[in-house]
Length: 181
Image (tube, rainbow, N blue to C red; front, top):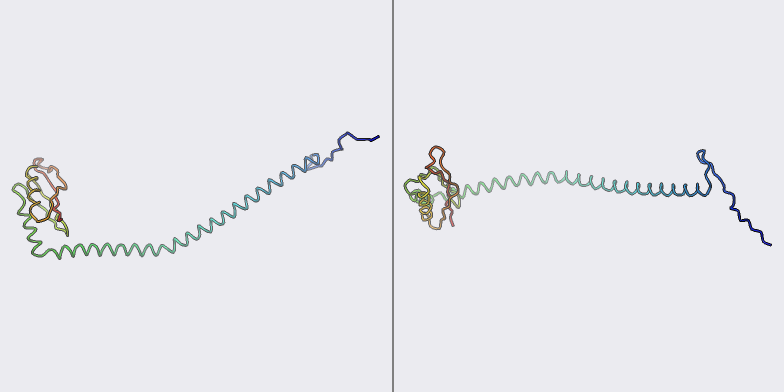
């Protein structure tokens, strides 16, 4: 005859922090806690490593930005110099074209203005002439633009701005431009 003990084996009990816990359950809890702690430590280590790498990248970028600051300042100074030289070149082009033929062009523009249109500003530039003045009516302003179109060969007159004069609304204040083609 075979004898078998069908009763469960006696459970061993552990005492942890004053609590009695079965050994198997305690082992499972400690194993789970160790796994969670290991995973948390690994994640914290990876995050710390990533932060250290990012901090290094930020430091390198700051150093590069400080090094580029002098280059940017020099580029800004050079851009200002170029702008000054371009303005000088524009002024020289105006002055170089201000000989007798330019004076004749200004005279032709002045002679092309019909009666009842008065110029109070005529500013020649390299490729155009800006005109300002007043006109007695819209009709005379239109006549003036047609006359200005024919004043210089290859020029186009355009109205830039038109409004009634403040003191007398019947008189129109205008700005026009005569462009060379």
